[in-house]
Length: 265
Ligand SMILES: O=C(O)c1ccccc1NCC(=O)[C@H](O)[C@H](O)COP(=O)(O)O
Image 1 (cartoon, protein in one colour):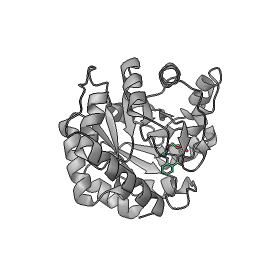
Image 2: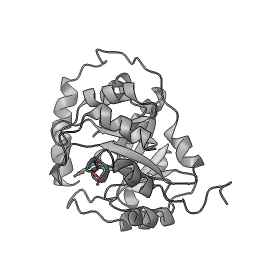
Image 3: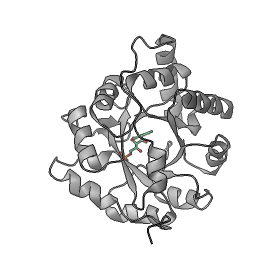
Image 4: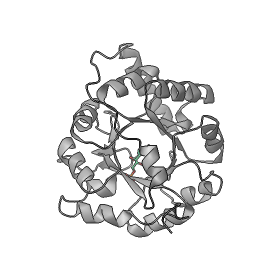
């Protein structure tokens, strides 16, 4: 395990210990339409647009945007879902960001965090998330299976994230709703789209795949589209766009899928 991941998991263990078994608030909105379904049915790459103030690799990205305002702009620009980083210590996010966004948009909302406990899943559900991230590198295969199962019981879709072949095997064993290939190396923070290109050769076409991290231009989207992904998870590039530029930039990433899905020929 990378030392960064070890550090973040130490902090998560402490946070989880302090969490109540059951959230002190209840979900007050219904679940949104399935992202998995949209990924499977669309003939263009679908964009999961991330609300990301800061990151371990870049420090502060932008701290002047309001979560609800930006999420609504993502939705208006055609994003398929909003990803909300809820980690405070390393990404300056919060569960409050997620609650506010989930109450304000009609597209599904992903809780992007380092989830290691059922408590966090209950909390995500109560706050209004529709999808949760489970990172294979952060969990034993047994815990991954338990958390995946519990998320399904709550009605949450799972985005199961991998970085390499070994993690792919573990992820496939738990039948992910959506598979995420993260192009960012957790040891060096370097980003390489080759990670997506290489792993896509081993993934059955029945599983919708998001390529995550490092998407800067439509050429990047085209590259991973050719490899066969169904969508992209994009944070920094979208966060850095002004309101006027955002729709055009987001549209630029919505390139045609390969192989073209049934009905789109
Ligand atoms: O973004 C980071 O620096 C980072 C470092 C270590 C673990 C995770 C990290 N980011 C979480 C993500 O997966 C990204 O926020 C997401 O894929 C979007 O990436 P990008 O488009 O490159 O902002």
